[in-house]
View 1: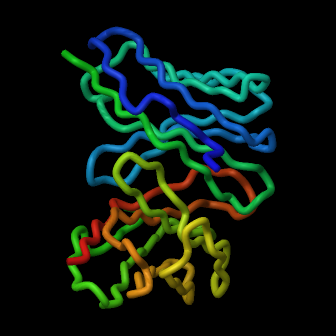
View 2: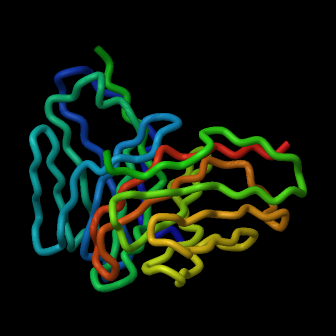
Length: 113
Length: 114
């Protein structure tokens, strides 16, 4: 049972344009969401997070939107840069639980110069 | 520099041999985690530990074992019972147990069983 899903395995955008990565979840108990960025043969690095009490969180070029009714979150990267090319994972967890994160399958973003 | 170290980066073993992957952190984090990543899949939780001398099975614990004798260290043993051990293994830690703080990841170990 895949509780966190990233239905787009890959995404290609032009440098300077907006990248939108999507993530859906099924467990309504999730109340904290994170995005990680991963380069090949390296560990993921934390990018941005959002609590379920918010619907938007922004950090520089990165913005995460949360739609609780639709159980959907998205990561917007504006403007996209070639260095953003990586695999992006969304993850979800339940506060007060064990700190476990449930990861999606990942979306490979390619930003073309 | 604080961080998480995993060694070695690449590891080769013969089928039927047990192998132990190292994970050390100097971030003073309470919780530590082991994940496995396969091509086209997300990170799947193998084991996690919220405190020294205590650990719990994750979603795919069969064929693996761990220990947590020190706060800084959380080694993972891939036993011969693991049917498909070839994968990229990631160790992570987080600052607090029982909260959804972000996890910090090590560089990973790619294990290849021949």
